Length: 399
Image (cartoon, rainbow, N blue to C red; front, side):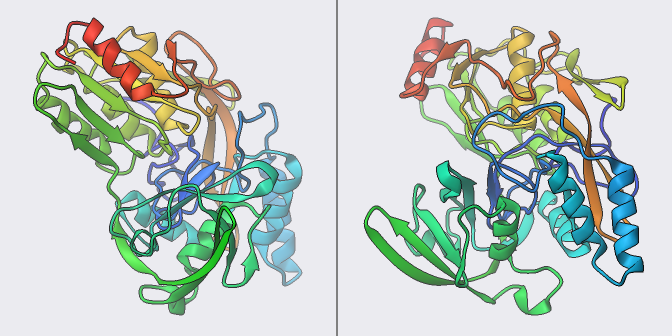
């Protein structure tokens, strides 16, 4: 199977090579420190921008690689930070998906792609007015044990107000500065939170957490529901294992709502669970056209409905779009985020990593995703899962 080196925004990047297709929007304060509208410390997707957004991303704005490298080199000659100078060039370019990682941040990110991270188990997203909202929590994590809930507002971290700050910066602070040994497992982080009129402060201890990106819900006589939160290493195989255990009589719900993206190769591997080969997506890299193909042998018989929403990003959109275009699934929910740009990583003189936009990807039918997203076959803003089960029932299952 040809395609980007290791993964989409969740694909592990190998030094000096791999094309990083970056499609994602969730950053978990315990999973990853990348780019995104919604992110978590443990999120596995590298989307690429230092800023976060709540709607579709604009197209056409890209950071110039030569300008970024010149700025970093000049800053180092002047005794200044090369990564900060490069980040300034990226910021002024208006390219929201390109980003700069310090060596420590990039190392952390690679570890996250392998399925573990140090953090408190929070996912955050930037809402209206730049407010930072908790989008979800990892079960059993320090954040979950304190009673923090999705929808709570995060006002400050260690006394620093976070409203309007890049989500990547917020996630980095939640995880701790990777360059400082004192910011690892067991170190404290104080969060100021708000829920309606209530304001409170809680101090959490960072811990090492394992990502749980694929969960399976099986109930007798009802469709199996496979929830994929992000595409980290091994996600594709986990999806394929789950599909092999699904009865074709009950059907399957593939839940990609809130999916933060991740490794492109894992998204394609997941598509291979439902397709018997064929095109999954096309993408361009500086004008050179390339394609991604599914492996043969997937289950093409089981009735399939895919759930999506505005938090479905990047590699999640790639998968949903492929199954929709190939006529393999009915897509239900609300329009997806719209992250369909391609980033490629390169090392800067000071060892930091620049991931800059080099192109965009399209679905098998040629639809552009960047700035547009995937439109479901059936729009369901509320009660989407119930509607999806009804659709499966109509496809001949026992839903």
